[in-house]
Each structure stands twice: as C-alpha cells, then as structure tokens.
Image 1: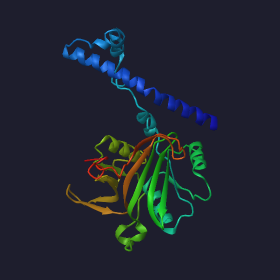
Image 2: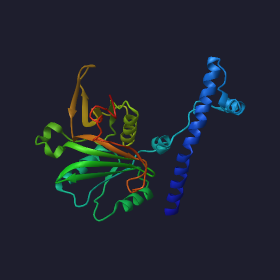
Image 3: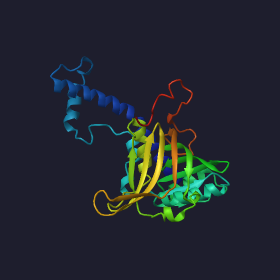
Image 4: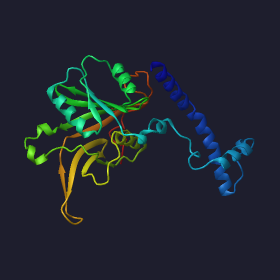
Length: 293
C-alpha cells in the first residue's frame, strides 16, 4: 500500500510538472488559430513550427483543445462515487467541540466521526487512503470555542484551511421544538458570490463534500460569501400550495468561514506547495476581495 501511494504521488507530481510545457504549446496553437481566423500573417517566431502545430490543431476536439490542469485532476473522478468523509478533532476536545463535530456528522452526508485519541495526522491520512475516504475534516478549538476547520481532499490534496467564527450549534438553541429534527437526506447546495478564480477553487472544495441530491429533497445547505467571509446556513423548506406558499425554516448549525490558506498536498505533507495564503498585513489587504465581489 505504501509503495502504491508513493508511485501514485510521483505520477501526480509528474503530470503537474508537465503543465508548463503543455501551457506553452497551447499558447502557440492559440496564436496560430487567431492569426488564421483574422486573416493575418503567422507570427515570425512560429513559422518553423507552423506545419506541425496546424496538424495538431486539426486533430483536436473540444475536450483536448484546452490543457487539463492538476486542479482538474484532483477532482477528475469526484462525480463517479459519493464522497466519504472522516471527521475528527484536535486532541482532548472539550464538550462544545464534541457537540459541534456530532452535528457536522449529520450536516455532511456519508460522514463518519472518529475520536482522535493519541493518533498523529499522518496515521489518520494513511488509514483514510486505505479505506477509500475522499476527504478528511479536522476541527480545532481555542478554550472550548471552535475556531478552525481544515478540509483535506484525498488521495493527493488540495487542503483548505478555514478560520471558524460565530459558531451556533443546535445544542445552544433552547427551543428544540422550533428547530425540529435534522434530516439526513442529501441536500441541495447554494453557492453564492464565489466569482473570482480563488472563489471558484474554494467553491469546488466545498461542493465536493456533498453528493448529488434527489430533485425532491427539501433540505438546503447554503455557502454565501460576503467580504471574504463565507456564511454557512442550513434550512428546510415546505410548500403550502402555490408558488408563493414556501416556508423556509433554519435547522442549524450556523457558522462563518474565513479562508486563509490553500495547499496543493494533503494535511500531513509539510513540504507541500502553498497555492494561496492570505497576507493580512499588506497595505491593500483590507480593500481587496479575494473570493468574490
């Protein structure tokens, strides 16, 4: 198993290293296509390669014209089977963190909760790979308040690091009759205002935690971005006759996420390349919106 994982990782890194060459070739073909469409002369630096490149252009279709990236490769087989998620915490979790992780187990379909005990991260990741888990979610706390959430996609990444804010669990709400029970049906997803390239990357990581729902399910999960804070809300809807007779009921939990880092490897790989990290002390950081408008 260890040799197989090493081989697969090496193949993945090799494909990733080929991206630069493929991107360069794609740019050359794009320039030739543009020149032919506009009736202009072929650029001077491409005239020696024109015949070979035009032959490649003729053989391409819509699937092969644009080169695939390692980002496509990470989730290439994600839709072939439902996600299988392992949820765990930092060591020696407090009672509020245990309650929060218990509720997250129902929020994410096909999720399994594991007591951390004395296990190290590398052991957890290897065990999850061996048992075909697609994602590992780790939740951290500070003085009994959940403050961090890490989503690591298996087998090769990426890993997204989020700050957790304003966590309100179902357990915190006194009126249990008002919120009712939490169903386990696969939910519909609403992803709002993930308009930038990084926003689409974050949305891609989040949406692949949920399987494809049935059309008639009444459960809705919302990730709404505003000023780079992603609000998580969980609702049920009921129809009471007519298009306007829809009742929306929040069933909890609710929290805010703040993305602060994306790594290209799994959470146990300290040497993994950092794809993006927030720079809060730059002069322009307070004005810029990284995830959406």
